[in-house]
Image 1 (cartoon, helix red, strand yellow):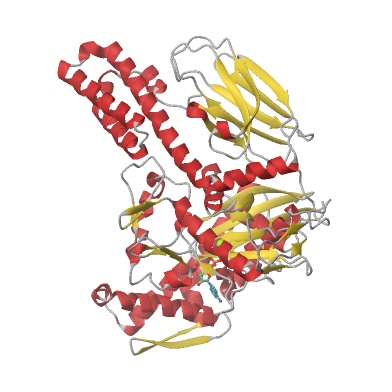
Image 2 (image 1 turned 45 degrees about the vertical axis):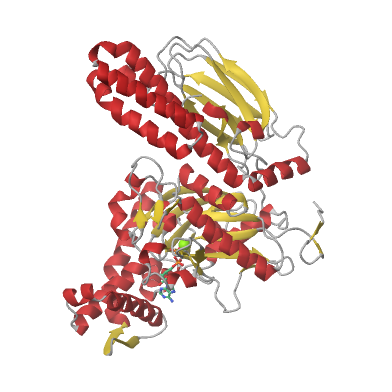
Amino acid sequence: MGKVAINIVTGSLQQQETIVGIDLGTTNSLVAIVRPDERMPIALRETDGLTLVPSIVHFDKEGNPTVGNAARDLLVAEPERTIYSVKRLMGKAYKDVSGHAGMFAYKVIDDDTDSLVKIQVGEKFYSPIELSSYILKELKHRAEHLLKTPVTKAVITVPAYFNDAQRQATRDAGRLAGLDVLRIVNEPTAASLAYGLGAKPNEEKTIAVYDLGGGTFDISILHITNGIFEVLATNGDTYLGGDDMDRALATYWQQQAGYTDAELSADRSLVQQLRLTAEEAKKHLTDNAMYTGTINGKEVTVTRTQFDALIEPLVARTLTSCKNALKDAGLQTTQIDAVVMVGGSTRVPLVKESIRNFFGRELYDQLNPDEVVALGAAVQADILAGNNTDMLLLDVTPLSLGIETMGGLMDVLIPRNSKIPMKAGRQYTTQKDGQGGMRISVFQGERDLVQDNRKLAEFNLTNIPGMPAGMPKVEVTFLIDADGILKVSATELRSGVAQSIDMKPQYGLTDAEVEKMLMDSLTHAKDDMQTRALVEAITEAQQMLDTTDKFLLKNRAILSDEEVNMTLGQMQLLREAMNAQNKDRVQQETEKLNDLSRPYAERVMDAALKDAMKGRKV
Ligand code: ADP
Ligand code: MG
């Protein structure tokens, strides 16, 4: 694979473009690479010596973003313009996070509890994907500045428990930042790779990865055979981390210094000082037995022993999670071959000691715990670049595979770079009453509209027995075997009617064509996402119109003339918004029509109709 590229900035010839590894963290993010000459992963370090970039975005009055330490400095002064912990919101709907809405100092929009969350800053709305893309863009710029070469390819890590929506959101954030995300890797897998665990062929190991960060705790049990990482169990607490240790110490000092709750609530900067000094003390106690400092002229002290007593209940909670994870995996501590320590908070001596005792073995903690995930991502990137032939490189799909859904949208079943063999499936339903057939069109590519992708095949699933729209359950399955042959099958589950087809997805595509399709998806990322949002809104609106039409026809008798006229008027407004191709208006008018007709529907809704209003339509 001897590709030669010319660096357009320096004009020099280079072996191959560096693929960076990125740890996109809740608290901190960073970039790492494997240098071609040294063959060791390193975290990229700024001239100030720092590798970590706080995952914080601040917007000024004009909406210009600032990322990192400069943004963190504004957390206290401008809390409503300074966004932190955005990773917690990735791929989430408001109803998923509403229980914790109080912990965000900025405005999380709650107008529609079922759709994805948005964050309001001044007059503008941002999705978690956009916010994450600002962090990724900053990391990309830093890497380009330090490496003096364009950086367009990355491996990004996510927690092992992230679901499809959260992984896709992370991919989209990368795409928006101008990065081709070659692979999404689980954080515990990356940490293991950084230590070279499980990277050799014929190696079999069971590993526990203990990750205690700023605000989250994860324990993962992995099984590795022949370079394939399998997650056996995950457990943890999404609201437990170093921040809780800081809070425990701050409360202790509050009592020591005799501050009343009233004094604290009157003085925000005092609260902030307590918190920041507590974090400083915590870090100091990692290497010292005692800390002394001052807050507002008053002296505060804490010994290692006192601190340990304060955080002991927090550490005990992590041990409970470890026990549960082992139980889920059906394993004893003695069956764990290695314990890997990840996250800044694992530097705390009591944490190390407790974990060492719990598992009864030495820990993998020699690498910097803040950096180990990014280092592993860089190792994975290096393997993908084909530079590391000692390690196993699994076969992967070069482009995403999916089918066409309503409005010409691409619905991806197997994302690009999935390892093969691979199987994926999803259920769809019909759009019209009595619909007897369904066309399954298979596409390959990264764009959101199928018209921009490459069509591989098409077939019809026929003889679906007559049922109301939304009732049939059509399961579409993609299976890629070890030779890269894709088999697509569709089965209507209620009747058992089935149909399938075989094809070879890569056939006829040269490396250059694959490259071009990827570049196109990068240059069109923003447009594509807007188009997708509009198409989705219009599709939903059309369904709403169809349902209402049908409803009016069937239930004219129970409605007053006034109700019918109001409904028809609102349907007209919705059609106008659709014609104007205005996403926000379409959504507003759909919502209004929904509000208007809901009470009527409740009058007569029977189970079948309930079914018909749900479900995905092909
Ligand atoms: P995340 O994965 O959530 O982005 P990190 O792994 O970067 O978080 O961990 C951040 C946490 O590590 C913070 O709570 C920070 O105070 C803590 N931390 C960093 N250095 C030390 C240290 N020397 N001793 C104790 N805790 C530390
Ligand atoms: Mg982390």
